[in-house]
Image (cartoon, rainbow, N blue to C red; front, side, top):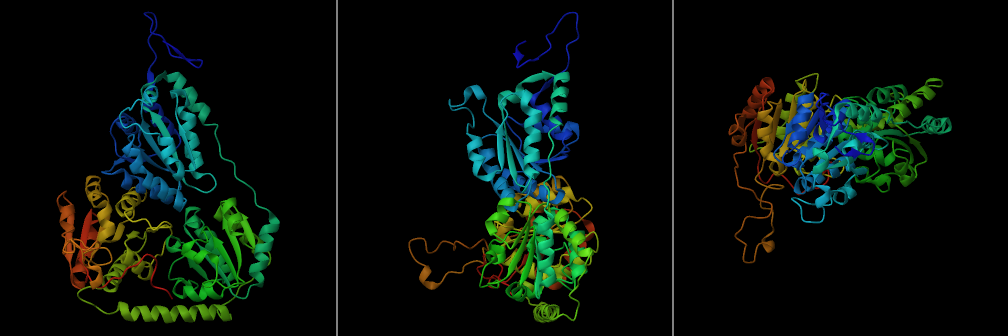
Length: 580
């Protein structure tokens, strides 16, 4: 046999038993397993079917989807929920292109993910090979790092590199391109073991934190008159909930979570400022921002939503993010480690605002007023349903589950916006929604990831009918793997609620076509899952919804609850409309 860069394959000999040969498919599977990967998501086909089968044979669970887009969303959410890179496997060409949705979503949300795609045989590049595409260039705008494996002997090191790169610094997506010829190359078992052992030496080093920066941050908090702690999903990813709790309860500083930061501290905590959001960010003089970017969700940290003289203490794992925002104090590092250092600094000279502090009283008063106003609206049983009545019933049913709390998945314009204001999170990493990019279509992928990552928890999706439609076929995946997921579809007949055109907008040769926002009225979404053996419910009254929730939450089987909503109850929405 030919020699491959000093790694010689064992020649067959009549006097010697040939050593077992390891091909590229198995070596990738072994590399992933050795690195701790236990779950993969994807869609198989030429040339990666054998790779998926090899992975399964080693003990890696493969969750097969109908569409790479949903599988990519699952991989991204799995990376967030577990702290380890979610793995997406796709075929070449169009499979890779479909996977770009998951890559981009992962990088924007700062979640670790690795997409592995098969690609054309290297000797046939440029000839018009089957599904030929320069995939390294295609993924470039959406990843932190990408690499093509050019030879089987590079597989273990390249696999370890993309896995490490996805979690190092600010988490994000990485890409591994594996040509067909590399998948079919072989090395002996002993050579494979040597390559795997060598790759184990690839380690990640953590940075250090300057004491003076921590001291300055604590001094600002100590002397602040109206301090605020803001935290996001970066703090959730860092498992910083206990450190945050110590800081909040030791200092008495009110807190404001971003949507997916909800639950790190319970929404019911007395220092929660969510219901007084406008007051909190508009009047605070010092804001500690932990694992959240000062982007559109936080009004860029700029007036008029924020005070002109607010001083930011920005805690972020990315040095570039800190330098971009130019805060008063920037602390670069893992959120939990930085908060632990701040707590240690405060411990030697403690301070606490106390319940009688004017700032605390103002926050509590405003929050109580806004909650009371909302509860008056929620208490009404409106039929045909508006968004508030079913959302209250769902909220109460989820809270009744106790601990471990269900993981909530939410998408859709009105459905998600109202849900942010009404649904209550009491435990960390129990809310997944459209996120930083406002991505629609994530719902079923997120549900599947959550059910696989946390099999002890019920997963509840609260979806608009438009959001559900992006990935509705994946209800078959729920049934196939018998995942504990209940999908609740708010069915109002279209995007924002059907035909919303003004009379002057109706004209032209196609004026009799349905409006661009309209779907088939009364669509029987619940029957879709029944086609595959799941359970479906059609509900339109409080009693019907309560009964369906009680039965499905108890059964913990794949379910779709089709909730009929008044088509005129919603409004066009791209951002949260429920300000306070």
